[in-house]
Length: 460
Image 1 (cartoon, helix red, strand yellow):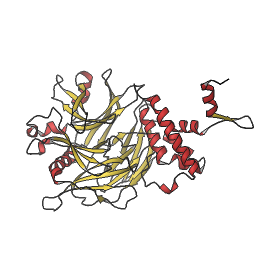
Image 2 (cartoon, helix red, strand yellow; image 1 turned 135 degrees about the vertical axis):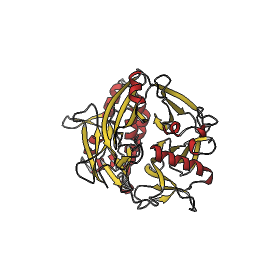
Image 3 (tube, one colour; image 1 turned 90 degrees about the vertical axis):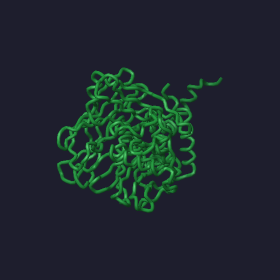
Image 4 (cartoon, one colour; image 1 turned 180 degrees about the vertical axis):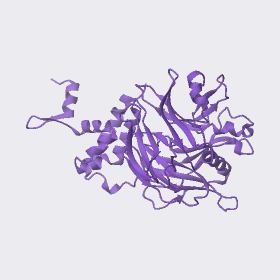
């Protein structure tokens, strides 16, 4: 007589010791580990060496990150950069509106001044966030979940206008920091691109360089990023810089210049349908509100239609459907009337920085705003917007001082928080699993989990 399949499965998942104790087998333990927060996994590194090697391997880190993305926490969490009372020190906190205490100190940075550190990437890349100390002209990469931080080597041409972004190379499973540079007109190589990879002692030129045919687009994208604080976004293996058509003589056929993080080559994406024939003649104020966002791995252009009156004012989210054809679709329109209009029409800067929540709690948009009060003071807020019921909720509000800002758009000091085990330093491949059997076991478990576990949590 054959036993029921459910009982058979349970017996494959458990075993009885001679003393009568029930123990969990490897595949069940592995399944449990994938669902744990990073803080708990870091504690398990101390169990034994084999666990430490397993839990720090690229395979486990990749699958844990995929599991976290499928079922993220229902409530948003932020990384917040804040000056301290001690001169030359900047603190980095995690902030959750639902936890007590709300602020949790992650680490401190020895900065040039308390207010010189800003967040370059308000939406993390595989759990990593790029920071920049404007006074020291130094970049940092941090993982808020593991509380790891690394300072990047000095970069060349610090006086040049440049825009940096953080991307992830799926082939090497390591991050890259990419810096697109506008040089001077008399320089032989006016437009350049430098790349930093973990473990390197210096930045290097990108493998493909900046082709001449993309030079005007690169110039427009870099100036737009710097003057309007429009950082590049990462999705689908590419970094994306938004072009400002008002900086060009003719209407550009492309709206975005792309950079393949793996191949280190440039490309472009066609303009959205709302860019008219005379788009390059529009005012600067019309261009500064448009920005890029990534929503569920889809690159989006946020069109800021704020006319100063509630009627007709809106934020439109246009999603890129296909890189090759350059087709776009209007995914959502946020009507700026009533309470939403009062909160989002008044600030000088409104940015959609990503999405939060999950299938069960409902996906929400994360919206950051900045309002210039007086002198060097700015009121910064982070909101969540629920598109199902059209409810806007403020989850974080702070007044900041930007003494070094000579413009009306200061840098951001917060980012979304994402659970990830991604390292900020060069990982040692020699510390792979200690035996062939262990390697085979982890490979088997990875394949089983990808095929049978992750689909259980997919949104329908």
